[in-house]
Image (cartoon, rainbow, N blue to C red; front, top):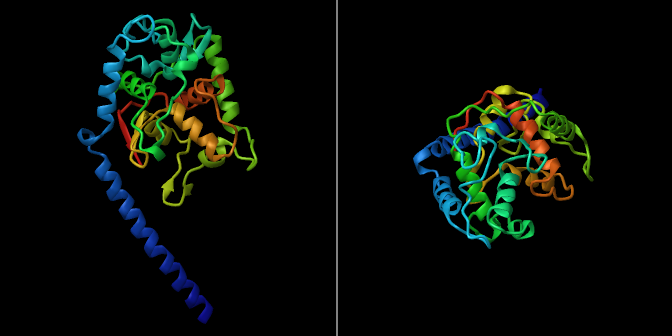
Length: 268
């Protein structure tokens, strides 16, 4: 009886901080829900300036970039990506497509564009040009349904590759994306983990990216999310805009089909 009482006491002692933690997290999330106070809006403004500014060796803007709906048409384009592009003969997400346009329209080399793709929060850096541009283009699909196409054979192939990569175990810890993101109720410390197989869950998550990360102090994109997840699994860096990164993003986006973009998001 004494041991049962002790066990009950320990359980209660552990439950109280957890309940307090959950309440604190909910209050924190409620504070983050104020869209007008989202610092990501400033990054979107920066992205708009960069998008319309004439830059690079060709002294051109990105206003003629084709994101799949025709040159210069960005309204709703992000909601229909990743998608196949004939000029590159590959499936591209918005970030790899921006790289293509900066090379073709503005005259930068791909190496120049990819010199610094992510802000380093450890150095308190502001968003990079690519992050700001991505946030701006994505914002033009705010309130629209997530609706990536699946007609071209390469779009179907990319989706299949992304699903395979999601389940593939690799690296020194023998992790896969599915290790953390294929069941309800999983968490790391107080952070609930997305279940990609839960339609409501994945729609809410994908609909909020690009998102302002409070702990990073900058807007983060899906390419950064792919890179960061691979880093956390202790696998080699996944290349920015690579077929593997785009395939994973394509799989996640298709899982979220039918959801609605609510941008910019804001997360821990």
